[in-house]
Length: 471
Ligand code: SF4
Image (cartoon, rainbow, N blue to C red; front, side):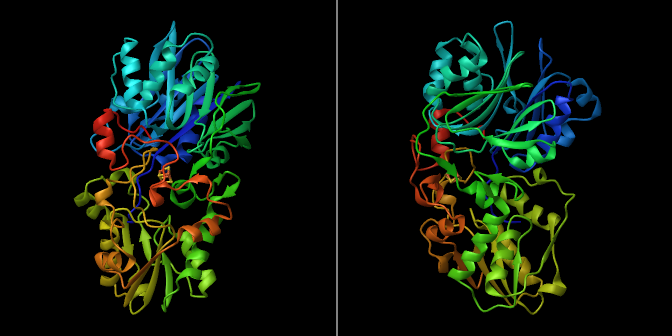
């Protein structure tokens, strides 16, 4: 229904004695399904062999009971993936696995590298034939050629990588998690009965009954065993650049990112939004589900009542919505139905967290007006997106972004709304209660914390490097 950036990827890993690690991985990935719905995979090691199973589709459709029963061992990693159009092929599903010595190395990656072209040349020079089109395969190939322990190999390869990465990697006898020196994507460690867990978000720890221990530090590589963890600061942490969109939209609202409750952060963005611009209206509504916390915050601050105005059909999978616009329009009708009895004759404040192209927003506004809304005032709980993301998020090309070259009045007219206001950058930071340094905000400012080869458009980037973001 809403017009969001496309999700990225989720990773999970577990090392635990006497536990059903394949099943734990399955549940962990299930909790991370919002981060990627196009493919899912699990790799398990029993100490002598690594077995990988990956397929296109949702976690629950990729793994049935017989599959889970076959995934036995002491350690496992898993991955859910979102990919761009045309790149959603089986070869790009993860974990990526390549021979390493007498065994296998399997890897799951959330993020995107910005020096894939240089790495591609390096990997080709090593004699490796690339099968997939993801930068994750490049990292796996580099690890496959590094001798020694997996932790040593990771520490040797990390300085070669530029960009955003939160990664889990598994061999027969080691499970290692590592994170880029800017800490763009989240990665957390948790204790579980019998061992240790690593995950993109704390909601996955909750799902498997693990207790949050700490974040993987930017630039750190951590080996997980049933008995404990061994962390090594493989690279000095540089300026912290946690993706601020994790708090705005990507992370699940019940997760804690960098010590901050995501639901509360979104609620406070809504409060700040109401402080900045409250129109005369009758009712505040959020677009399910991601706009709801900010809509509640807006209602609390403005004193206007909050109501549901749209019912979502929860049985239409998110992967059902295809990236092309015609199918997106069909998806709106399949997934959402307006509550005419609530809407008719009312002036609505509609709170959503972001607008990318505006196409879906326009259809949503029309749907609410068709259901009898007298006025629709859009309030967006993030600043205008005016730059593409090079760190693992599909934001569309710059010339497709509705906020490029248009002010709020122009965008309101383009989507058919009676008024529109975006949360200011200052307001966003105030709502977060933290200073701007420490966050990547490049899609709002164009100020990229990690060098990108060409900031003018994602397609050109992909064409030059030949690499698709692995997310
Ligand atoms: S450009 Fe935007 S979406 Fe990408 S990492 Fe930075 S803040 Fe996140």
